[in-house]
Length: 486
Picture 1 (spheres, rainbow, N blue to C red):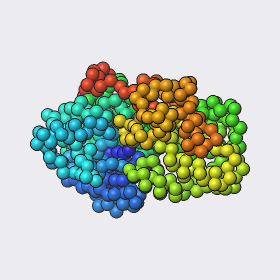
Picture 2 (tube, rainbow, N blue to C red; picture 1 turned 120 degrees about the horizontal axis):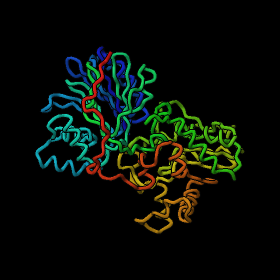
Picture 3 (cartoon, helix red, strand yellow; picture 1 turned 120 degrees about the vertical axis):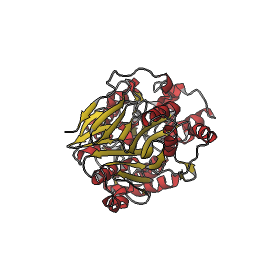
Picture 4 (cartoon, rainbow, N blue to C red; picture 1 turned 45 degrees about the vertical axis):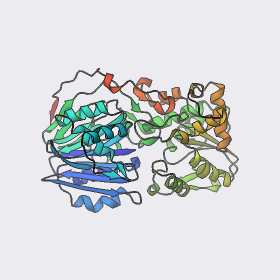
């Protein structure tokens, strides 16, 4: 995962850039970076795997000066990338996942294009995006060509002498939102970044839309599409509770998810409703409200500094964080029948070894787990949300039941089939649970509140939208929409 933020102002914006980017810390754990443009570019990139973004960049931003800037927090690539191109010098940050990265890399190398930015021995994906954009006749043309070339997704912020370009990926898997404050404009992935730095939401960028922000205001360089496939997992897990996507708040969706889970649990008697911190808490609150059972905290997270155990790239680090961050409270656990609301079950190893085990060890009478989404069946192709197919708990269950990996898993996708029920029974036993009930696709979609066709549900269904190359329907918008800054 990654998070990006950009700002354009008539005055110095270093502090705004610093705090706006910092509000994306929940989206990544490996690298952070800032770039500011004044008389010239200033840029800083740090490894934040062992420290928080604020501590690494607090002194840096005080030495930066300029009225336009971009920032990123990433789990995969060091950015912003700086390049002196045929369009002049620019900096760029990106978010997304290029599924055909190796194919594109070979094609560019065959054309004589060189790559210099490496992250752990692998070509930096943001530099690959830069080199694709440079194939165009202009920056906007280059972004459009890049959109056509990649399979997967890419949203970006690009900073040069013209101003700050913002482009949302062609199917809108990741959000970009425009905000305004007095004489400043900002673009964010997480609207929670706006709340404490004084920006109000002006517009949710449409899929494929490209805008330019500078001292003169806002210029739309490319209209957006009426088609959308925003990632549903943003509401279920990855997004911050105070953020909204397409105008729908994350915390409210998670409470509705919890309510739906409780409605399907009329036959379960429990003493305590709980959520795995942090993202499971709102699901649990919704469950408690609907079930009228007391919400309590048998597991508490020790400071936000431990971050998310899901995002680090290595299993060893993920396991260490999962071990250390949750502290059980025996007085709440012992002798009780406990509902545990969780955002999802990906591999299941952390839930089993570092959550459920702590409950059993502290004397829980029963442990009932309720994930807020259906079983994850496919690794994400668009936002790096899930990884190898063989890591997924549901796929391990299917392999065990079938005796080998199978191609047609359609019966396991339908929660009314016997095969689905046997899969859930296998996972229940493997995770040492009393009961396990997943959210259904239908209830999850209703909790989010968008039409099913507007959501990317690939991780659960394996269904992809049609190729970007065949998408022609665009909203009729004025190509040169312009708003002056008052």
